[in-house]
Length: 34
Image 1 (cartoon, rainbow, N blue to C red):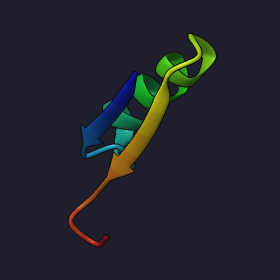
Image 2: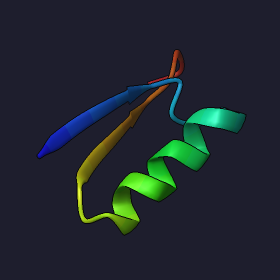
Image 3: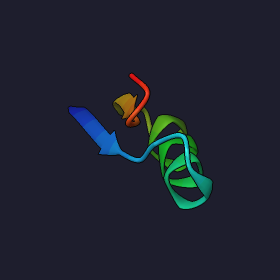
């Protein structure tokens, strides 16, 4: 499944991205600077 995490480079978002990737998900980390 493809998942976009808004704020994926922040403190909580980066942890969420890491957990989702370990679970085998296709993750895109979006931030205001992207």
